[in-house]
Image (cartoon, rainbow, N blue to C red):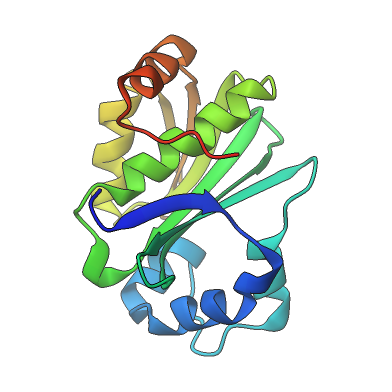
Length: 171
């Protein structure tokens, strides 16, 4: 996507993450966190910045360094990796979400992940359409207004797309 780059989070991103979260609409916050976060708690900000053997986190930034999207993965319970993505309201619908998902899954695949999971609010039609497009055979279980998604990671498709140059593999 023109004007943005995807990269791993950095410790120095704390204020930019806090600002990004505060700028999300209540609706977008609820779709991602299942609740509104008018003032992001320090623990939430730290969790979104954590990179370790269990967690990976990426941001999409503009040319000026503003964070406009965040994505994370962590070792799952029922799946190898669970993912979560949020894109700033004014950047939604421009392809950042799918790019972040692809990049997360490439990075997870390199670490051995074969299955992916996510919890999606039932009203999040955009993400549920994305799930159906990316993983037509995904298992989807509805419980208490949310949808638990479980799917196989298509390594061949991810890496073929990577070689095409359409999805950056960030270090």
